[in-house]
Every structure is written in structure tokens, then in C-alpha cells.
Image (cartoon, rainbow, N blue to C red; front, side):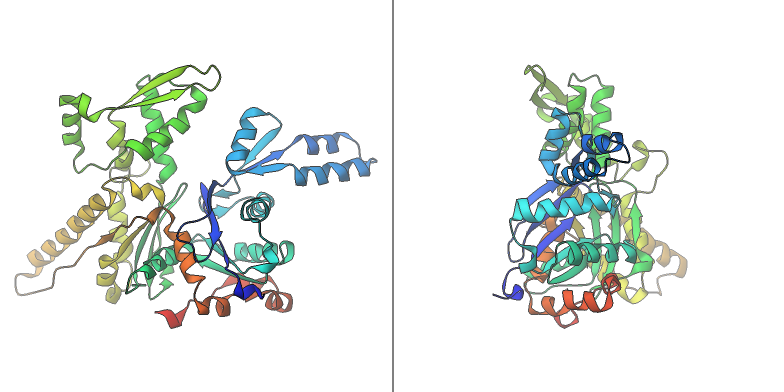
Amino acid sequence: MEAADRPAVVIDNGTGYTKIGFAGNVEPCFIIPTVVAVNESFSKDSRGSGKGNWIAQHNAGVMADLDFFIGDEALTRSRSSSVYNLSYPIQHGQVDNWDSMERFWQQCIFNYLRCDPEDHYFLLTESPLTPPENREYTGEIMFETFNVPGLYIGVQPVLALAAGYTTAKCEMTGVVVDVGHGATHIVPVAEGYVIGGSIKSFPIAGRDVTLFIQQLLQERGEHMPPEESHEVARRIKEMFCYTSSDILKEYGKHDREPSKYNKQWTGIKPKTGAPYNCDVGYERFLGPEIFFNPEIYSSDFDTPLPAVVDSCIQSSAIDTRRALYKNIVLSGGTTMIKDFQKRLQRDVKKIVDARMDASVARHGEDVKSQPVEVNVVSHPIQSFAVWFGGSVLACTPEFYSACHTKAEYEEYGGSICRANPVFKGMY
């Protein structure tokens, strides 16, 4: 059986989590933290063995290459043993440690998916601001280390838009608001092509919401184990948080009926096994509020997310703006917070309407213009929309012709991975 007859492997590499699976599936097979735990004792042994003992150094290097863990298992190992050091290979959407990234991919392929990389084409994802050199490194690892027959590197926002192929009509022009774990990007896409000059980054992401909730709980003096506080804050974010339309009204509702709006988190201390409780109050709506009033979290940045989205669209070509406002697509687990879509749509609409009113006031009633439709798209799979978009695209016949092949790599080198064609025939 040829590799093209087997389903492609789809790996969406994120700062916080990586989604892996096979093309054609609706959901990824595994969603695992993007972290590697490496046993540092071997490298210390090799350094202490002296220059002459090259056999000991070689053996230590081999053992270090074998003794590592990824994902939840890496986190567990680091907590239970001091010899394992954690490495986060991706920082703010960019690969920061290529050795750890290669080890991470190795475990993903062999231990999780349990497949032979030589038998499958691969689709990997990248941040929209990734430098071309990083694509070359990715190509070298995939073709040299794993000997894959074909590779396609897709831009995450384009794949998030491609998740719309589940509908009768897929609109490949839109703005993707991709709120990841460590980075938030607002990326305009026109006919499947990223408008590079209009990409905006927003300094607040999912991790910041977790840290802010953790800070609020600690300042209020909630009794929870320090080593568990970050995980507790993350679970509270996922289970109890919602986006409010007016934080002053929310304060009033919580103060009037605390029994109705306050929640309680119950956990068990890992060291003693004793139960503990945390009250969850204002954190429920203050956590997501940092996207719309960032000054409550950091004094370094005070431009809300809706204003950045509007600025992104306004900096794009004038003939694409109406289509961009009409298709603002959410991507990332943090955007699943209740009413996030409604709040973003309302605030962007306010900015657009205020601009239209100012234009009418400036030029008079003689200037007539159609109202701008603002539509923020939300769907149940937006937490892994990028992976799903990759799964859909890797099922199309055009995918295999768009991939870079092993033969092309051997002839031209890693530079072939600097650019990937867009599937023009599909739009």
C-alpha cells in the first residue's frame, strides 16, 4: 500500500497543548501538553567522567536520548523525581528548543499514534509569524530523522478557516482570532492567503487568564496547596468562567445573591490527602474580562481585543474589509468561555457603528452607505479548529500534490519548505 493511500498524520503544535491524530477524524486522537521531561543525571555523569572516558560519555548521551517523557507523563515525572527537568519546546508560538521538539515528535509518532512515519504523509501547523528558517529546520527533522514520504506545513489561521468545510459553502476570507495558550494572533485571510502586513498580536492569551485567576485567589487568601494553585486556577477557568456584558452589574449580582453566583472548588492535597475547598466568586467573570479591559491585568497594555480586531481589518485592503467583518472566526480553547463570542461581536459592532456615525456627522446625510455587517463565528470544535481544518484538508486529493516529497527534499534541500502552496482549486 502506498503512503498516499493511508491517512495523513496531522500534528497541531501549540505553545500549551499539541493535538495529534489522523486525517479524516473529527477529533484529534490525543491532546497533550507540549512539554518534555529530560533526565539530566546522564549529562551530569558524562561531564564528570573526564575527557578521556569517551565511552562513558557516549553511553550517557545514548541514555539521555532514550530517557525522556512528554505531555502529562512528563509533568508527573518532574513532580515525583528531581532528576527530570522540564523543557517547553515552544514559546509564544515559536519553536524555542529544537532538540526537545524532535524528542516530542518522536514520542508523538511512536508512543502515541504508534505508526511508522515512513508510511504516512504529514501535515504540521505553524504560527503565522514563523520565520522561514524554522520551516527549514522542521523539514530537515521530518525528512532526515523520520524519513517521511511527504510534508505539508500549514498556517494555523488558514486551517482554522478551513474547518468551515463542514458547511455547504466554505468562506476562505475572514479574520481568525486565535487565542492560544501562550500567544494570541488576529490574522486576516483573503481567499486562503494570509495578509501578512495586517497581522496583529495581542499580549494576552489563555495562560494569562489562568495566572490572573490564580493571583485573585491568592490575594483573597483562599486555602489551597501552593503547588496546586496554577492547576486549580486552570480548572476554574474551564469550568466556571463566563464573559459578562457589564462588570459593574456582575459585581452587583454577586453581592446581592452570592449563593446563586458563587461556586466552590473542592480538591485533595497531594501530599497529605486531606480535602480542601476554594470559594470562586468575582474570578468567574474577571478572568475573561482581561481581554476586554486589559488594564485590570497589566498596566503595560490597555488596548482591548475588539479594538485590535478592528485595527487589523482597517489595515487590510479596503475591498476586503466588509468580507472580513462578516467572517470573524474564533479559534482556541479560551474562546470557548461562555458568551465570549457575543461580547466580542457586540464590542466590534460598537466600534464600527461609532465610526459610521462619525462619518455621517462629518459629511452630512448626503453621504449614504450600507451598514457594515459584523459577525463573529462560533462553533463547537473551535477549541481544536486548527487541527480539524488540517484533518479536512489532508483528506482532499489536492493535499498530496501540494506536499513536499522526500525526493524533492533530497534534490533541493530544506529550502523547499520555506513556502507551501495554497489549494487554489478548492476556493
